[in-house]
Length: 381
Image (cartoon, rainbow, N blue to C red; front, top):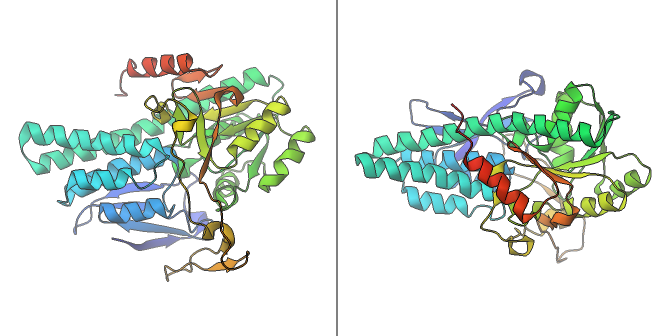
């Protein structure tokens, strides 16, 4: 089960916020999560003692973001193994928590495979649990390293496309350290540009209906000292029309074999705007987000979220109560269309940046080549 473990004021936590960590107190191992539903008002940590609590945290978006979901999934399998639960059952439950994000199933399967291999080899559940945890920790470390490489490749691409510097970047949703073992994906590129003195402005879409841009990206940008401005999602078009956007940088929850990109709903309209205004539209994601088993965008299962997220304005949870308040903004009984993601076709994507480099144009062949190179890259020591 999960409970609120700790609360810290905003000025006491470093910029590189530990969104997830494994701990082993005397009463048994736990997975500790920074509850992202409570940001930016307060920093509260959730303590998960079993996979079902982690599933609840994933579905409620307390933990979110494609790379971090993969890490969380792997740790969830390790937690089930260490606590003596049915590992295959826990793995299947974790995989189904959010269907669009492919990284979740990648992380779950990696830890589960390590567990099964060790169990078959030794017959010892303890050794198998140790193997699952080692796999989760390795994935966590690899993601941190991948984040740094994505930032470097992304900044190089930006400088090639925009040699004048002074980049004005528009981003959507949240792609920083809150979703990664490192400093993120798309946000990490913007942060690298800021550190290099080449970021003029980070335009932050608020990202309705749950405001991940307003609550989380603005929070991370402020803590990093970046020049940023928050805008409503429907104001993006006026920014493009005014010539105030040099590039769009987003993350991804699943990239199909043909290069179709599933990301937080609202990404596709930005791609259309970017194409019309001749602005680069760049996707930044680890290679694990590319799913060769999903042939095209039409094959991506898009998660449908509850209607109340649209028909109500949900206030942050009240400290110490675990309760959330919602203020109705639509008539009682109003039906709502609330997909969590939309899909951008590859012809609207200027480039996909991964830890293995960038691909442009985005095609089935270029992505297959990238994945092949990744499989032949030695694992980090």
